Image (cartoon, rainbow, N blue to C red; front, top):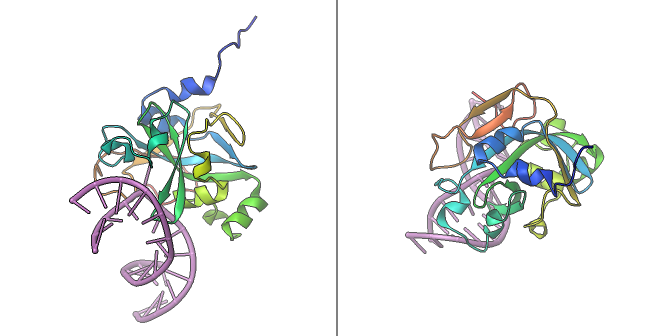
Length: 189
DNA sequence: CGGTAGATCGACT
DNA sequence: GTCGATCTACCGA
């Protein structure tokens, strides 16, 4: 018989280096608060990475980033947006930058206050608004309600480039995208 | 189209 | 006080 006694398969998925997980998340289906979409753009942030919130050590704001693999880390960006991350090994996390929306389109349109498909989930702030993720989700595991994640079943083609909007460690090509997707926040060069 | 000001919060100088 | 892992509205060409 096939044993399925392992506790949380997704914990193993996230217990890897943050660049591998950033790539592996491309093509995965992310569910949250009644809506869902295919992850088409991510960025990896490591512990010894000057561009990462965790670089300066643990603070009240980034505490969730030091949780176990599969932890959700939500942070306030520019005083306005709630950006959504998934923790790999403690201190390492992947920012979800863009989705191709698949489920709950009407809900997403209402939350985003627009009908324009290409503006629903293309950018980290927009993803947070579309998924209705807030700090109250900080520290929750991705495998329990109201969240869910189904890793890509097939191998997908991935493009990469420099991360967006940072001023340090700009040389690392740790932004990843689903090749050919029309739902990137910015084109890959 | 492209450029930019404004919104607004936590961490750090 | 300054600066972001950002987005939108509004301006001018």
